[in-house]
Image 1 (cartoon, rainbow, N blue to C red):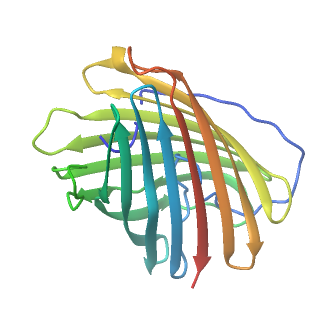
Image 2: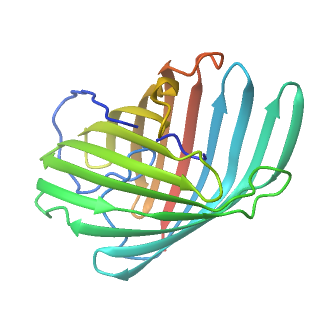
Length: 246
């Protein structure tokens, strides 16, 4: 499957207090709760490396548009590069179409409970053997804001049509807003094939988000596995994002 997904996860992070702005976007794997209120474009690149392979997804472009308050749609397409057993290949990535719905929106005062879902349909547009099947991912995010401090959990299910590689996953993110323009978070993510929990993988991510200017955000994360399927060894993942409101 394309995204690691879990049974349950937990984590903790504490930093100095600071003002809050509702909503935590990328770079975290836990889906952000807020739907876009205007058009947005995001450029990203992701890196993965373990004992068996190295993979780069990007550059990729994501275009997001609001449909109505609390509902957005987005489209993502990029390039892939991979090296496995000494053989390299590259090509287009799959095309992803997602819809985000704020079932219980975040409160504007930065305090309170929220609930969001963002199902995504993955279409097999990738070239050079990167994919050949349709897939559906359904995450559900629940969280609570405590002023500058936020805690969020996600449970997700991924189904690949025509295959038996369904996965479940989960994560917990703890985030602290340090200033009006900068915040950091610590995230625990774990996932496993639906009927093979012994093959679960878990990792810890740390990331930040920086509002460089009004409507322009730069964010990044890096993570290291703390548990992985036998034979794969420890895995390192990283991602960077540049997002612009249009």
